[in-house]
Every structure is written in structure tokens, then in C-alpha cells.
Length: 448
View 1 (cartoon, rainbow, N blue to C red):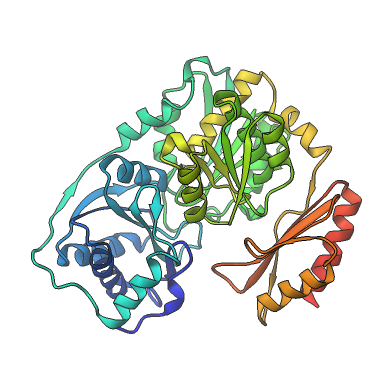
View 2: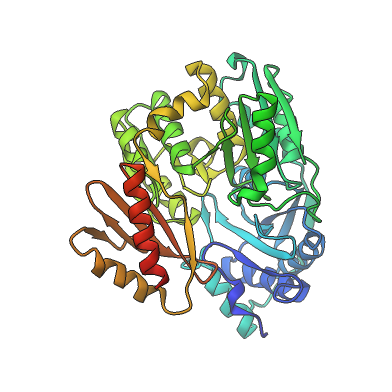
């Protein structure tokens, strides 16, 4: 079968519906998934996209054609899907394109929690099976059953914090008409001291209000303004499928993923003294500095949930964080969740009896980060990274993921996007002036 090979990404399958990813392709991917993993049961959930019911039908027909029984968990957030896969111990497929625009469709695939299919392990195998029609010969027709895990999920995530001792908190949460709203309401209803104001909590695949990626400033601007205007303690923003999560502090300021990783990492070390914590190569020095200061062991890893989860499981790390708003928890099957970090932050603010801006102040005074700067690259990104390594050859150079360049008072990572023709730059320095100077210098080299 002819299929656009570009839909087979590093961490998932994703493409525009129906041009690249339609029901015919979804059906083939379902057959390939069952053939490749040779599993007899697959858990399948879906998001709220307008194309998702049709894609759910297609992929489950493919799975059942190959003899796999389907457990339909309905319309769920990705962390609910991970919960179901972990509890039943089965493989899984989630019909979602995460934070991509409305016209996209896709699949996130679990081999067995916390192992996900990735470009290195499984996704390219699915592509080859689809292209060559190399499916196993089925011996039976699979069946479908429906199970609602939502109440179990609510009960489980609430065990991860001391909900009875939260202080009164005014929280504004924007779920952007994605998948988190309904389950968020049910979790927060069980926390009487939390005063929740919801924004766009109803799932709506037409996305009538704003996009699904809170990393884009326009998608969080309204939330930031409302936190400020309404005197909220904190604002929470969730991406479309609920595996990524972002924080707005009491000033209405967006909090970088680096600083949230550092603060939550330090807080986790109060619960688990001396523990290991994983962070990605783009992260601020704040992360290893705060973890080391608290007696923990910081571990740097490649970008991407498949790599972070595997490293955490291998090392027994209690917590992991990525700059892009993915937060992972040993107590949640080494998986990422949007709802879990929101609970941890409320508990942290309560236990420390401090505002988020007070907790951030020491970091903001010491660490100056550029934020991610993306440049569209027409040529070979490897050549551009090599040029950066040669320009700064007197620095400490690492090629763990892209190129990382480190001096005593500033450092950066430049790496190609796994999904777009972009080179992504994250830079940090020990003063604002130095950060701006070096940021402009490196960007000029990238764009020359």
C-alpha cells in the first residue's frame, strides 16, 4: 500500500486528515500494529477531534481483523489511556494528534507500559508492514468490549497528594476544548479547598476558542490575563490530549518548563531523599543545581518521551521533566500526565505556604534562559550543527542530542526537530545581558 512515509514520526504517527492519514491508512496501521506486536488484546482510546470517531473505527477494525480483541476506553485524555494500559498490562493505541491543529490525526502507541513505540523501536516497522502488505495471516476475528476507567483514574491520581491538607487556592484552568476538561472537573471536585474557574473545559474538535499548544503565546494569553485580573493563585494550561502541562504564576507570568522541572524536582526530593531525577538536554542549569543542592542525582537524557520514560524505568528515577511541559512520575507508571503535576504544584504551594512567584524569585535572579527559538532550515541541519561546534570549539561539546555547547557562564543546545524542518535553539547565561548577546550571536550563525 502506498502511504506518506512522513507520517511515521519519532514518537508517534501523525498527519493531516484525510490527505495523509485517512480511514484506509488507519485500518492498515491497526493491522500492522497487531501483526508487529503479536498481541491478543489492545486498549484503544480517542480524543475529541472531528476525525477521531472515524479513525477509531478504522484502526479497531484493523486490529480485530488481525485477531486482536479491543478494549474500548472511550474519549479520554492521554494520561487516562496510560493508566488503562498500565493497569491491564496490555498494548494500546490512542487516536490523537496531541497539540497539533484541528486538521491533524494520529496515533500514540504503547507496547507495554512504560514502553512506547518510537521511530527507533517499532514505528518504522509498522511503516514497512503497511507498505509491503506484510500482515500476519489471522486465525480468528477479534471482538470489542467497552470499559470506563475514569473513576479509577480519579481515585488513583488523588492518592499521589495529601488532598485534605491543601490550603485554599484559587485556580484558573484552561483546557482549550481538548480532552482534559471533563476529568479535571471530577478530580478537582474532590478537593474542597480548591476554587476552580474553568476555561473551555468542554471537548470540541472544531477548536472554537484557541489552538491546543499552550507553548504558543497566543494560546495562553487569555489565561495569563485572567489570572492577573482575578487574583488567582495559579493558572494551569493543558495541551489537546493532556500529556503536556503549563503553569502561569500569580503575577500572570508564564513559567518555563525548566523552572517547573527544577521546583518540582526539588519538592520530590523532600518525599524521596537522594532520589534520581531525569531532565532533557535543553534544560536550564537550574535543574541539576537545585537537584544536587537537595541531595538528589540529576540525570540528563535525550529529548522525547520514549527516551525519558525508558531512562527513568532503567534508573528507578522518581521524577522527570522536559522543557516542553512533559512531566513524568514513577508513581504514575513512569508516564507523563497533565493532571498529576497540577496536583503536585497545589500541594507544593500549600506545604511551603508560599506563592509561586516567591518560589521562582531565586531562579529568576540567577538563570537567564532564551526560551526555544526555532529556525526553518533549508539545508542539512547536521552541517549547521557542525558549524556551531567548530565556531565554539574551545567549549565543552556534546552530541547526545543535537549539539550542546557549554562554557562556564553560558551554554546552549541546538537540535533538529523530529517533526518539522526546524533547528531548535535553547540558550542560557548567568546574566541577562550575556544571554541576549550570545543568543543573538548563535541565531545569526544558524540563520546565515
